[in-house]
Amino acid sequence: MTKSASAAAAALATPSPSLFSGSGSPAQVLAEAFLTVRDETERRAAPLSPEDQLIQSMPDASPAKWHRAHTTWFFEQFLLGEHAGGYKPFHPDYAFLFNSYYVSAGPRHARHQRGHLTRPSADEITAYRRHVDAAVVKFFHEADGDTLTAIAPLVEVGLNHEQQHQELMLTDILHAFAQNPIPPAYDSQWTFPAAAPAGGQAPGEDWVTLTEGIHSIGHAEDTFHFDNEKPAHRALVGPVRLARNLVTNAQWLAFMADGGYTTPTLWLMDGFAAATNAGWQAPGHWRQVDGEWHIMTLGGLQPVNPTAPVCHVSYYEADAFARWSGKHLPTEMEWEVAARAGQLNDAFGIVWQWTRSAYAAYPGYRAIEGALGEYNGKFMVNQLVLRGSSLATPSGHSRITYRNFFYPHHRWQFTGLRLADYAG
Image 1 (cartoon, helix red, strand yellow):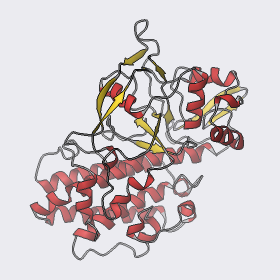
Image 2 (cartoon, helix red, strand yellow):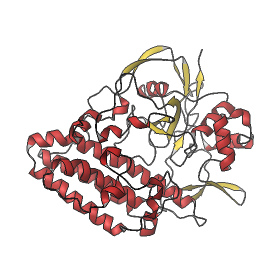
Image 3 (tube, one colour):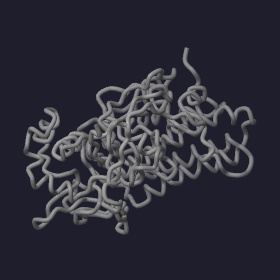
Image 4 (cartoon, helix red, strand yellow):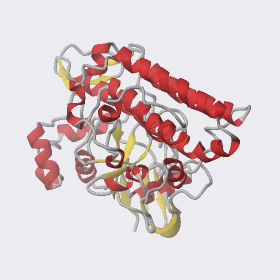
């Protein structure tokens, strides 16, 4: 026996006052929050041509058109399909085309073939989104108070899920643009966010020291969180030092100049094999122009800024750099304790930061029943945790306990690092 989507969502996440902070009736508040997030997806898609929206540059990425449709399918499948009596799907084939990995929700088109879907067109996906948006808002205004209370957690899961895809839309199109020999710009006015000035602290304060102690880890407040952030539990942390600042491009260039990519003793065996097989000589999206390193950005191809945090590095590269530096990467528990104390510069909004913690269940974690139980728990193997958020993370989607996760060879996301050191 499986739970309904709304009951599962209540177990997956707790409604956040920040998302549903508008004034008016419950239906109006839900509708405003819903449309705000849905409109942001369209705002991010607006600079893209129909051709841009189709491209899938690698199996790990998805076309922008697919992201727009999949997030719409989520609401059609789990909200309208299960709660709006009499609702008929917009198109009978869309559940197959735009389901991602929810095996319990039915069969799905192969992930690595999403770029083959020339039909439906981008305009047809726009019509699909408008149809579902109108149906959802209509449902909100027709539902009674008890129903709105019951579905609120499901709506919030869906909105946070869409915000995750908003970030992926930018990382995926950037990867595609980076393959183009004539580098396009997603937004010609885009600039990399400024980092906190390295060395801005007093002497000796570039590092924060965590003395040995027991700390509460995980989400304990009555605000939105995914199920992989709980239950809150106690963990031994320290003694350790964490760098207040992110590793910069200047530091990375020194690593490269010192043979960092060709020195096997710096690398994990799988990492060196990945770097060798893929021909890595620099971070992702870097290319040399007239002997100088440039990086492909959302603003197009730009010279590498030495003072900016390094970006688009895999866990393997981050680990090798840390070893070259005589340091290591922090655990996610160490990162959380330091961030909670406000001791880390640029913890949010520039790059996700690799930790050396395996993505695994917290003590006492249990995946919920039903299709939404597939959201996080089934990925808890062979991946590493990243903390913080990136320049592509939508506003309001960051929190200290957020656990992002990717495979160690992945580097198309906005991923960087800060160092840690023993403080014995």
